[in-house]
Length: 302
Picture 1 (cartoon, rainbow, N blue to C red):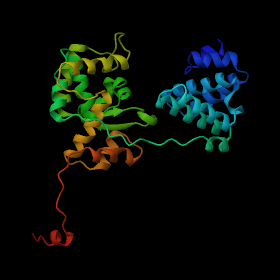
Picture 2 (cartoon, rainbow, N blue to C red; picture 1 turned 30 degrees about the vertical axis):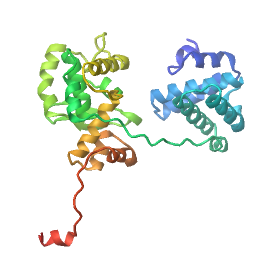
Picture 3 (spheres, one colour; picture 1 turned 90 degrees about the vertical axis):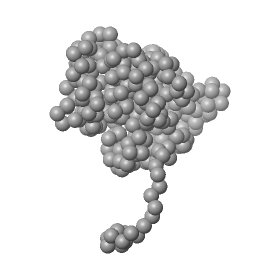
Picture 4 (cartoon, rainbow, N blue to C red; picture 1 turned 180 degrees about the horizontal axis):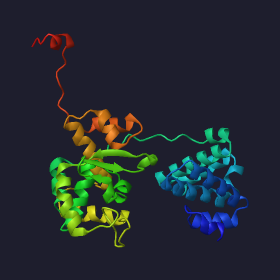
């Protein structure tokens, strides 16, 4: 089998770069090998591979042979003349920085432009809007899926790859295996979901994954899941920009409003950095408590 057929994170761009750019095949093999050892995520490899291959095709050189100044000029051309999306621009910078460091070109990596994070607050549904969304689909499978995604704050891929065996009704836990960053964690299984689960299993009869696609034993596709939420939205009066990730934002915000501390929410969401969780403090409607001295509570003085 050819190298093109063997690599699993490729695209047409990668295949073109392997065919047309001298030295890229060998360098890309090192890239795949090192990232497999590091257990990098498939989505990261796919995004980086495409961007790196595009750079190689543009210059006709394997990227480690291109100077940082040339890369910066290329990035300027991308942003000003080709009007590429922000995500494509970011993947190119992150991918090239990763590539340079892989080939011990730290100075080259540091000369690439830094990326500023935009402070954009997440879209959050109210509890009433959540209720309206969950009862909108005609299909029991779709109603159950939307409610479960919200109930445990799951990411899209965590929801898709949730196996029947990962749901522990007795302990009221869901085992999230290798979520973002290949990290596993436990989240709380809602009592409401636990009560509906036997009916769901009886009616849908999934074999392996809780939410299977058209092929038995395979997970439901991302587009299919997004279609479900889009169709549900059409039947409600919600006019916000909503995706599956909005349910995760709403879950975190509602937990905060219900009084759960931010560190517990960080653990449930699987955030590596507390700053990712702190953003929900800006959108949660929390009633401020009146300040007091702990000495007064120590002696129960009111």
